[in-house]
Image (cartoon, rainbow, N blue to C red; front, side):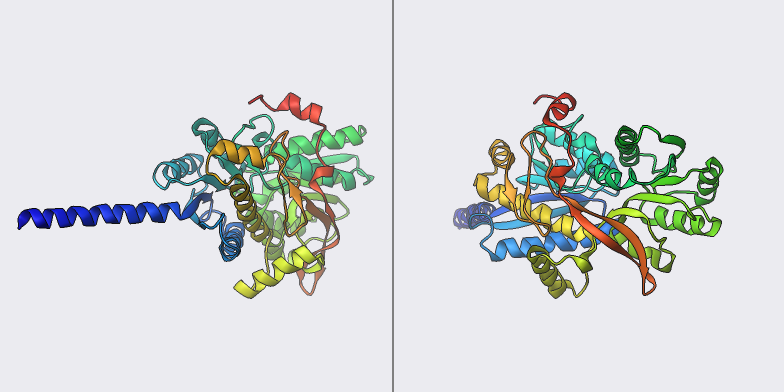
Length: 400
């Protein structure tokens, strides 16, 4: 009797194992990592974007008939926690690839992990140039236009300003340092007559706006480059408006036209800043209108730039997995290099030379409308038009 019970139990366990194995084979998992608790203004719309993409991918048949599953982890804004999350996703969850990250230093940490462990990583948001150039590697691809690309777009407009004396304000970590460095380089090449009269480096997320504004005003620049975002941007604008820092001065600003950063400024929005951003309300292309309709139907809310990034990250990842028809990283790399995919901003391509996508950005000016900030005079700039030559990239990027 005992033996029969033992055999029945063993068969039940074996059957469960087979069922679990079959279930695993009917799914393809992506491990997603982001700073949800640290930067909810961007990451919550980003999460909504990728969740919408997962629904659409599975409704259209999944990945060659297999269900796409995203397992998401919060890195809390800490590179070490991001690497721990990446390790858990790969070793315990058996994900086919890693995706996501926001802060540049975290993106670099996960990229390094992916390179060491030979895991495919699609970086969604980190903007540092290092991720595809000086610290680029075979296993890392990046979706968003880099600091170099956005700086080149902004410099195109900034170089036409008469201002010669410039100051910079940027968060003191990888993203801010990279953005200032490349903007200064490109701007000085176009305008050798420019003087850089002051640099302010407040800690990310902890700006003491009064002394920063006072120091910049004391340098008496004719124009200011701003790289702060989020709560730091709100504090800087409020203090700058109070002290008249922006009066009769040109301001060029990374990211400020993105709704997640522009909306909190409300009626304090400074007018006339040259910015990169996302004027969702004035984009009239069929691709964007289809995305907008689907997003608003699901969430009864308007998209932020994070929504686009999350959506396109998963759409691109699904396209790579589908074409590779394999979870082998080498096969995914082979199809991803040079792969063109649709996006709400039009077709984009992941370049073979550096794994950078050609997703672009909108450039325009800030304005006030009905008591809130908007982008006006905005034009979409294709990412492919704002990259250095292949020869320059080959000098910067390590050989695989």
